[in-house]
Amino acid sequence: MSNTNSKKYMPLVGAAGIGSMLGSGIIIGLSATITVWQEGLGLSTGEVGILSGALTFAIAAGSLLAGYVTKLMGLIRAFNYMNILYAAGALICVLSGNFYMLLVGLILTGFASGADLPISLTVISHDAPDEKTSAGLVASTQVFWQIGVLGSYAMAFIVSRVEGAFGARIVFGILGGLAVIAFMWRIFSQKFKELHREGDRYRAAEGTKSNTEVSFRTLFKGNAKSKYLSFFLSIIIFYVCWNLLANTFGQFQTYMLVKANASQALATGCGIALNIAGLICGILFASAAGSKHRNKFFYVGIVIQAAAMIGIALGGGALFMIVAMIACYNIGNQFAGESIYKVWTQESFPSEARASMQGFINGFSRLCCGLFALVTPYLVVPERIQSTMYGFAVIVLISAAAGTIMLRLQKKYGVGQM
Image (cartoon, rainbow, N blue to C red):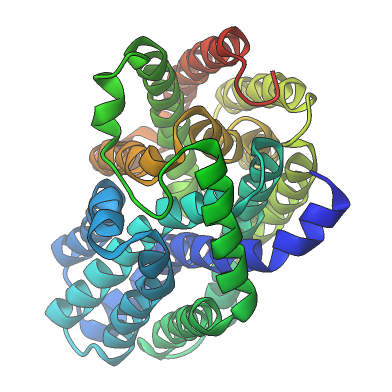
């Protein structure tokens, strides 16, 4: 990605990136404040589980329906207005005085964040002049996702001593405020309107439909169905395997550390420190995403992730080893995870099917993670963590195999930086 293109499109990356921040922010924000909500609203253990599950499935629903939303509203209108729905949900959470009101707020924010991610990435790839520029811009949005994770941990840490549910209301209020900022920026920016018009011209020159979404399933019926089906299967296997681990360490990292005898303050503080390492590595990968070197990063990332799982297993659940290996995982995670998945999806499919394709993969993956989360607390306790981590290492190897096949397919069909 040239410096000229980088500077020109970075405001758009920022506006789309706030959506990524809100997506990770609501997940980590709820995870880090759920005990505060429980105490402040007098929630039962069952109600806590319902809230966590409802958020996960609402995100999945938003992702699965992203293509339908863009078809109904148009790509750019969906991009412009999705964050106002998030803000409304966050406001309901802030004002909630009981379980049902909080549940409604979480469902709205979850749906909006689930739909916004594939829509935002499709807008970026729609507006970018070429696939190389698009790859770098799309990868850059993962930096904002990591900022959202880090920011949520930091906010939860700061308000952890506030009495009742007021601290949690502050966290959700900040997330709602960011959603309003994103909405206003996307709606009123003249720069974005010009970039959208340029994107229409680029896509017209390529002979693709602009600002019109079609179902990704139509790709499996055309002359190139074998190519697109191969891409789809490789990407979805890679992403589901990767996301099972990422969701485990995202939702249950604090739980895992506390079970290993860390204090709540230490566990939250570790979350901040470990995600700073991830943020730095995410920035590094974004700079290489549009170059031929990104595949080297992929293999390095896979090796680090597998080694981290085996390291935790060999450590026998020791706190120091868990912290050290999660740090390693956060590094490898940036090189062979969400960032490269986003790039693969955006550059391997026609622009008019990208939102529905990425939405389906995101949504299906979230459903798998939601189901897996039901048993995860039993798998990461000290007496079972060793066997679990060996199993996770096998999952990493499966994702590595799917990713390797994807790289070979890209080379075969001349896609991306191959």
